[in-house]
Image (tube, rainbow, N blue to C red; front, top):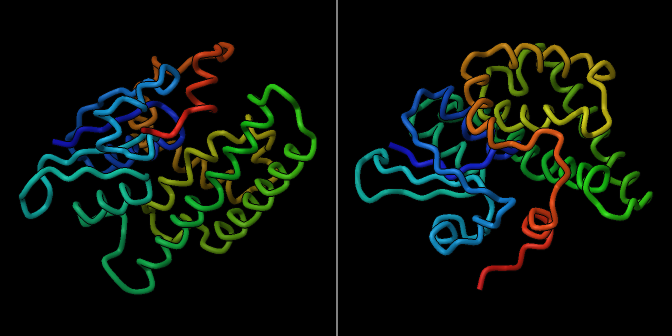
Length: 231
């Protein structure tokens, strides 16, 4: 059994989708990041960067003590290697997946996160920040659109953990101020993935916990944007 420490966000969805796609048994342990539960000592023992998601695998491959993993890229690789699925075992095909996974981790996720922050949540609207991050997100969408046009399929050819990592951040395109009509290859890929039953099940995890159209209160703002480093 895998314990998934989770909140329904783009990064959380990556792992709930992967677990559903891989058919692994898991139980969800909600970590309410708006209420500061990511700073609890028990959670920090698993995820020292005080970010969700994280997992504990109580039945790791080969047996032995439970394995705790944080950071979504590491978690996706761990789950893929545990099952032998969604990540080729070796060769060029493996590195094709890994490079697009790292592209999401180092580029699309951080830049879209900053763009969303300055567009939606910053108390002061800073034109330079909005233009800077918005331009970079548009550039990254262009990179992805070109890659998907080349493959005519998924980002590295076959459906993989790279697609699972990228998809939740493309889900935020409307909040990013973007239209998929401007990116036809992304639009095709997005519709194909969105139709997957396992992906829909992953997105449904904790759905009722996610605020719908509510203003962020001051406690949530402090915990999400001004969280102190753990002692």
